[in-house]
Image 1 (spheres, rainbow, N blue to C red):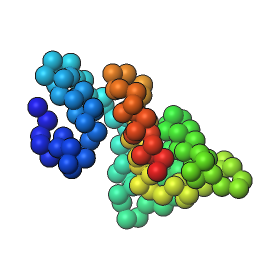
Image 2 (cartoon, rainbow, N blue to C red):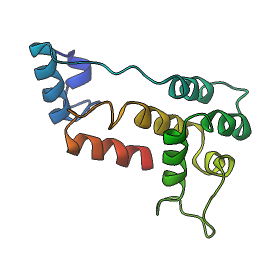
Image 3 (cartoon, rainbow, N blue to C red):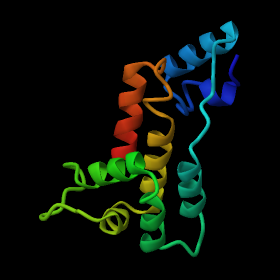
Image 4 (cartoon, helix red, strand yellow):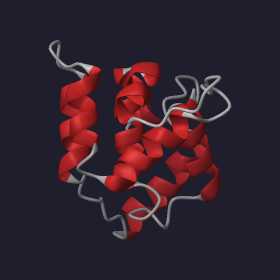
Length: 132
């Protein structure tokens, strides 16, 4: 069973349906945790570094086409859409900020290709959180 602090509905750390799904998978021994791709883990590390800038993070994103495309897609989404579409990763990183780019890297690194059992509604919630 997952800890109270993670699945307590009052604290709302995880959606209740996601907690139930995870508890079921853990109890049955069917939970396989994906390995985070190297570029995604580097994006997470760089996003917490004080000396990271948009250029260096964009250079790193060029190494993983899936993450790079996802960052550009989010940066050009209706929520962030500029008057002129962003075409470079450096522009996208500057518009989104390090925390959002890190979330995009994490999302694209583990979902959806590596988490087919993740309920669709939880994936949509995570995607909305990435875009916000």
